[in-house]
Amino acid sequence: MTPQEAYYKAKKSGLRIPKLELAISKNVFHSYYYAINVIKGKFILGEPLISKNTAYSYWYAKIVIKGKFILGEPAINKNAEYSCWYAKYVIKGKLPDFMHNQMILENNEYTKEYVKFIQ
Image (cartoon, rainbow, N blue to C red):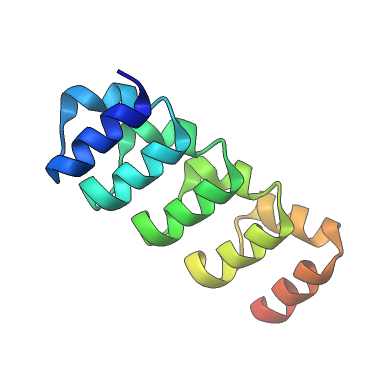
């Protein structure tokens, strides 16, 4: 069964179906939406794949976890915009040191927004 087929079967049932989760976890899109629409919470099996994607890591932290997603921070760190948003809307404070240092080095509009926010 493909990740898409497994996700839509679980979504249609409205219930978590553990035997489909391995298939779902093979696709970042379906892992993220399985967490939101079916589990309505963390999808641990999908987190390793989600954590490799900048956008999905940010949105997973903000919408699903509603807090830090440490596994996804290296991916978020690759993009100044998402790093700034992560500080403002997820952490609601200073980024972890490795992300903070990278943000300062970026020296772009998001760095300026971030520095203004943390002061």
